[in-house]
Length: 400
Ligand code: AMP
Image (tube, rainbow, N blue to C red; front, side):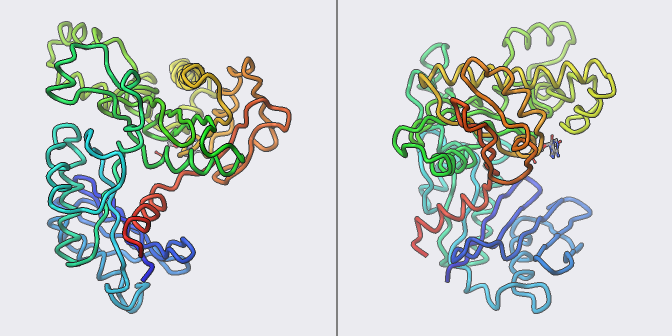
């Protein structure tokens, strides 16, 4: 009984992986799309077998979980004989508010807190709770574990997480820096401490999680010191469609000129900004922007250069925050695959004695030291694995 089902629910989607914790191998994984919308789709993948696609209706997450379990035990495409082989279920939950600084076995109190955080994570928390309740209904008696994306950020000191706005908003509404991608930052920084042979209690690590959503974290001995996302995932780096840091007065200025309200403006900052907005609507995808930059597109060049420049600025800030850095780590879609992006970011870091080995920097998607032996700071590529991180936390809490 060492198999753990990892579930990541979005408002109309459900991603899953069944992981055998004996050897941390993925037995099966898949995705339910368009839950509650016409054209539902379940795609189930098992290594060495053709993808299994089920196009029958997925009216809600409950039915989606049932279909996933059916696929997992199917005589043809399944990987287990019976659902009883699943020892526990690990759920990605976006927001745990200030209550949870660690993963926890789900009970009624935990569900209450997830519900109380609906206004902090309006798109994700309701779906995450539905996923938990669907798993409880489909597999009664099995332990469910909530792994919060905000938990890692709970390590920050008060002066790092407090916004310089009237204190009453923190007291009344919990307005503060929380940070997101926490499961990835915790996993990657923990792996970096081991991989670079750093002091497990004092090693200073900066993780650059660069994907469609991007964030940077600073941690000492695995404790988060600072992280770039804030109350919501909008703050910090330039992302696929999110602006990252911006003068808040821009919101009022544009609202007044364009005669739009703050909700519409926030939608623009979340969905129409970043690469997409800066490139004049060209694309939110890093590969498209890189290609257009090479073809001489000026806006793509500014977007790409600004994005790398902002990552370098955060690395500088976090090095100051920790009074030094032992390892800088790149991860997620861009960080794991785009050597040019990594090299350009590191070109700002000569003052730290960072030296990249161009041969090593050709690596993609595998764990490798990117810096030269003489580099004063180790630069690493460590692929993130949020599902495995969730499964490990679930195993630890449930002892399965
Ligand atoms: P993620 O959100 O972690 O899946 O990352 C998605 C981002 O990674 C997108 O902007 C992709 O363009 C980018 N990406 C993926 N593969 C590559 C690649 N080979 N070169 C450059 N960017 C990549």
